[in-house]
Structure formats: structure tokens, C-alpha cells
Length: 114
Image (cartoon, rainbow, N blue to C red):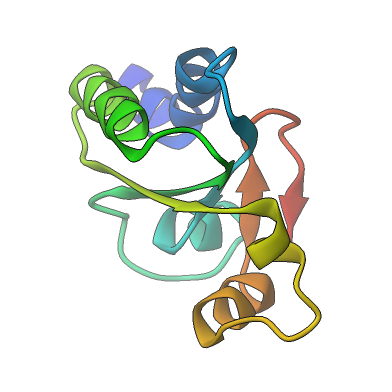
């Protein structure tokens, strides 16, 4: 039972802890299959966690944070960084359009956006 709870809810508080206070991090969102399952979409259990960081934090810092989180969660954590302007653009890239159309989970607030 503990493994199920850790796998289902563990990433959010751990990622919040890992990214909190990192200079240049404005928002942290979980997207992809993990967010989809959390939103109730059927599918296989996720084998990784996709994290979108909005802000200007250096990629090497984000990679180190994601690596540490992955070790603690025992699942790969893939991090992508976008600027806030890229995320909020009126004419977004196809990648951003796709992310906006799919479930995301705000790591800092716990809000699920579907």
C-alpha cells in the first residue's frame, strides 16, 4: 500500500521540496502520462515523470534537481524549461499548444488543470 501511495502522491511534495527556492523558477508543472493518470485518464502506469519548469533557471541546475528527484523517487524525472513568455504567448509553439491542451499539475499549488 505504501508503494502505491508513494507512486501516486509522492512526486508532488518531493518535487515541491526540490524546486522550492531554486533561483529563476517561476512555476513547476507535471505533464504527460503522470498528469493524465492523476486527471483520471486511463492508461498504463507512468514509467517517468515529465516536469515543465517555467522561468530562467540554468538548465544544469534543473538537470541536477531532476536527477536528485529521480533518485529519491526511483523513477526518471525529465525536465523541460520554458520562459514564462513562451508559456503565455498568444501564438504558442506546437509543443506549448499541446501542453496547454492536456492535463498539467502545478507542483507548488497542487492544482490540477484539465
